[in-house]
Amino acid sequence: MLRFIKSLTTSPSSHIVRRGYASEAVPERKVTVLGAAGGIGQPLSLLMKLNPLVSNLALYDIANTPGVAADVSHINTRSEVVGYASDAELGKALEGADVVIIPAGVPRKPGMTRDDLFNINAGIVKGLCEAIAKHCPNALVNMISNPVNSTVPIAAEVFKKAGTYDPKRLFGVTTLDVVRAKTFYAGKAMVPVAEVNVPVVGGHAGITILPLFSQATPKANLSDEVITALTKRTQDGGTEVVEAKAGKGSATLSMAYAGAIFADACLKGLNGVPDVIECSFVQSTVTELPFFASRVRLGKNGVEEVLGLGPLSDFEKEGLEKLKPELKSSIEKGIKFATQ
Ligand SMILES: NC(=O)C1=CN([C@@H]2O[C@H](COP(=O)(O)OP(=O)(O)OC[C@H]3O[C@@H](n4cnc5c(N)ncnc54)[C@H](O)[C@@H]3O)[C@@H](O)[C@H]2O)C=CC1
Ligand SMILES: O=C([O-])CC(=O)C(=O)O
Image (tube, rainbow, N blue to C red; front, top):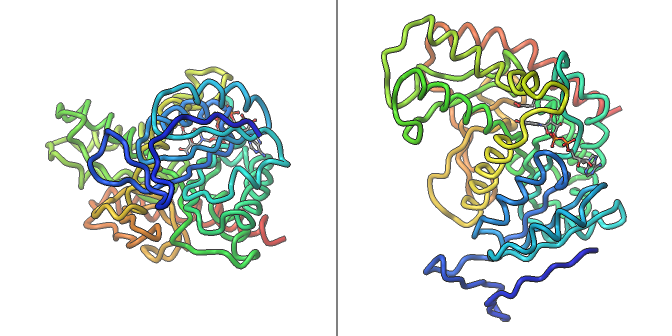
């Protein structure tokens, strides 16, 4: 175990850390990143180190952890950083975690679909989730590893088998789809990007990603052609980056940003901040599919409420029906893998 302790002003009796950045007491929260030394893992670890809601940051990877943990640990923010470098240390990395973020696994190369990652990543995710069930069954799990449409159902089955499954605590991270939809919409609608809100529902692969531009705010009068193009660009956003990186992986920096936003929302929910809402791929009754991404209200136990789709345009209704067979088959593939 690689331990890097930052000096903190802690109250020994109450597990409360008081710092200059907030007037109120901020509870201690441990965040564990699995795959912390990867393309996403490194910048995500940096961003979590910058988050004042985190008191303990556990960085786990099967390769290159010591350098990343040493590097991140020198940043003069609240959290204590500990690196865990081997399978034998995974349990310690997870013990006491409030939020576990999983960007462990291989990324796409040009010409591949996210589903092409299934054979390698399904096994990685299954192993990590077995360890989560054993060492921190109450943690909120933020699944980034692709194909998210299958890895989330795999995680659910692993937790069910271990008797620890709580649908309120399992999240597929689809925040990057929202981040992209906001950016692309702002560019076309000529509105300040920081003010934009766009729900993105469905799943996290190709046509299963369904941005609801009819609900985008601030409102703008965009033509059907522009909406179609914006929808396609959001759906193909991952592929756009994979092609631009030309064999050197997929989105890492924008994903780290998106992952940090989602983890921050989970921490705020845990801390009792009201009205924390993000889109996420969760167990759902919004459609007939058992898992579906939609807006979710986060609270002290994870998912507080899965919000409905709201009114859809005809184009979005059509997109919703089109995505269901693919999403259904990816979910079933994950369940089959985990239950066999
Ligand atoms: N949900 C989303 O929106 C997005 C998901 N992704 C996915 O995130 C995953 C990671 O992508 P990158 O960081 O670019 O890949 P990367 O290859 O740069 O990093 C992956 C890291 O995982 C580690 N790893 C592998 N097996 C592990 C295990 N059993 N335990 C712990 N660590 C392990 C590797 O050593 C490596 O450091 C990919 O599956 C990618 O498709 C990528 C972008 C967006
Ligand atoms: O496209 C990929 O393979 C990575 C990913 O999920 C994304 O960037 O949305």
